[in-house]
Length: 58
Image (tube, rainbow, N blue to C red; front, top):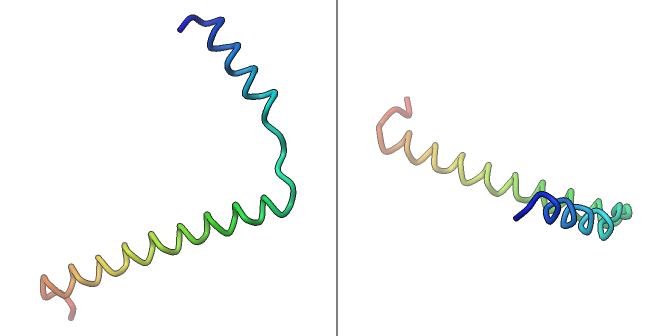
């Protein structure tokens, strides 16, 4: 792609984008926090299982 094509594509995206309203923003925050909680829970469970398998549990 040429530089002019890239700038044209960027300009099109910026023209189509808009600021989300408050309800849409709240929904995005909920989804992000839910994802963080799920990933953190999986990481915590994997850490506990690894600790118990290696016998370092105390």
